[in-house]
Image (tube, rainbow, N blue to C red):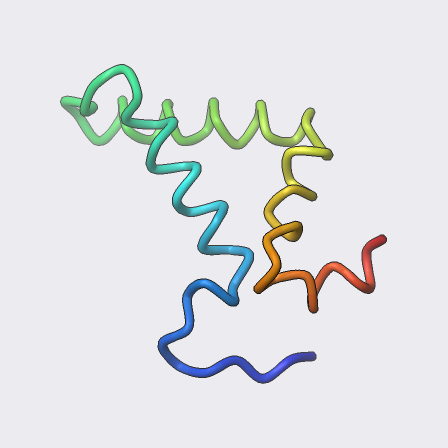
Length: 72
C-alpha cells in the first residue's frame, strides 16, 4: 500500500485509465442518452480486458512506476 497526497492525480494510475476512458468514449461524439454512454463505456472496458499491455502502460509513466514494481 502506498500513501498518496490528496491532490496528486498524476501519481494515480487510475487517473490515466480515467483519461483514456473519457477520450475513447467521447471520440465519436458525445453520447445523447445515458444508455448510449453506458454502452460506450462498457465497450471500452471490454476491449481493454483484451489488451493487458495497454493496461500495463498506465503504470509506465515515471510518476506511477512505484506501483508497477509489484506487477512486473
